[in-house]
Image (cartoon, rainbow, N blue to C red; front, side):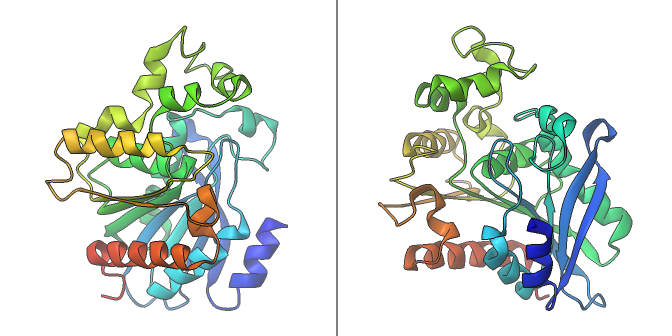
Amino acid sequence: MTDLSFMTQLGPEMVVRKITYSGADKLPIPSYFFAPRDTTRRRAALLFVHDGIHGDLKDIYVRHIRSLVREGYIVVAPEYRGSTGYGKAFYDSIDYGGKEVDDVIAARSYLRSFVPYADLARLGIIGWSHGGFITMHAIFRRPDLFKVAVAHVPVADLPTRIRTHSLAYERLFVAQKAFGGTLAERPQPYIERSPIAHARKLRTPLLVHAATNDDDVLIIENRNLRDSMAVAGKDREGLFYYQEWVDPPGGHAFNRIDTPEARESWNATLAFLRNYLSPRR
């Protein structure tokens, strides 16, 4: 039904495809592909990373995808391992902050091999919530691949997140091989997979938007990220840009609904991307 929704809403005005490419460990990764119909020009590209542990790309993002393709971007939205809708084995292969990041980065190889009009010298990445978390790990892991990154309401500090969420939430991590225990039992993997622990690695311009009334990614996580980047000097280097909205409608979803605050956030996002990717060049 989601595939049909994207086809119905976006198909008349752009290329919409469901593709599959090889991710980490050669795991087949389903993905959505959106692009302008005119393939005669070299085009900037964006990896578009959905939210949620065991989430998937939902049509709440139709407005954003339409906006990006109208700007001239090719958009690839990976359904990285652990995503919902592709069977139990795929669901259970979740590797939070690990191979799921490599699955997303591997979308670039698909573009290189099968989309000759994609200008990979102008590649960016954008994500929301858990997708923002993956976005940051992607640019820390492979800064050479990305010209720019945007993380909206991103998960940023796993130890703080675990302490401020329920025991049922922590069990989602305990069940994964990479964590192998609770935060109290094995703190190291929680620290190593927190973006704030890698602030000194930032080499790619990064924009972060947050909301003070976010009831999922509590504002303390993104303020910790902001402070870590400041200590690392990344704001002074012109690499880290941060803005938070005070009690916007929607909280965690504030810039995925249609309000003045959401439009302000999205317009700032488009301007930031344009500055580095020149989509209409």
